[in-house]
Image (cartoon, rainbow, N blue to C red; front, side, top):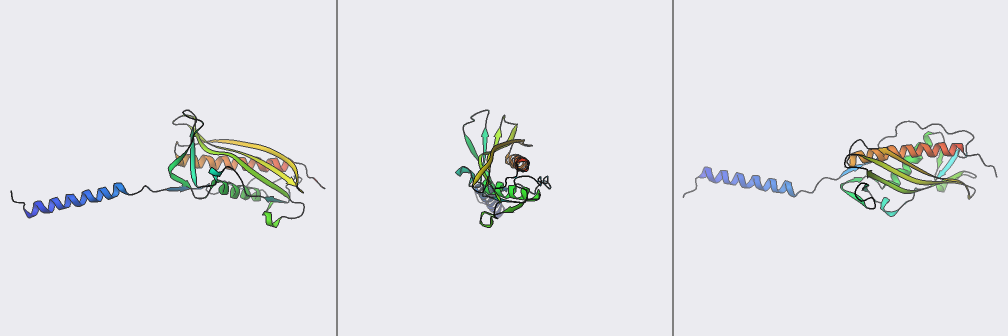
Amino acid sequence: MTTTPTRRLATLALALAAATLGGCASAPPTTTLYDFGPPPGAAAPADANGAAASALVVADVTGPSWLDSQRMYYRLLYADAQQSRPYAHNRWNSPPLQLLGARLKSRIAQSGVKVLATTDAAAGAGLLRVEVDDFSHTFDSQSQSSGRLTLRASLFRNHRLVDQRTFSRDSAAASADALGGAKALAAASDAVAADIIAWLAALPLRKE
């Protein structure tokens, strides 16, 4: 049977459409990046008589190596609580340890305390060290999850430990996905920052 020009054009159009769809199907998925967003507002002012009243050196936040990458992790507590899984196509725009450090410094500065780097330490200024134990999106069920942050904060003055405390916060996620986890972890981070500021303000001022 002879192929007409019209039929040849229709066949060519179908072939081009199939090739286009095939190219779209093989394109790699887009990676979505998250951060903590803008701070929720000014933190409560620090007590003028607190141990970190005027100036505080805030060291870089430390933690396990898996928090020193841009991967976002979640944990299915209802299925396998011992396994931490990375999201496939969602990332933090900076490693969580850096995001936490920047947020903590910002919140402390908003409370009225001068935040100093370790290279700019003033004589007698307190030194705050923070070590993170957990920072993950945890699922209690397929539809219910929260952002969980647990860390240990230590305040030093003149190379002596003033006090140390563990802080932990869980913030409910509005959606059971990476976006919900990112927002919940940002909220948990702000809550822990507020707890740390209140703890620092309550410590007695030491004169040595």
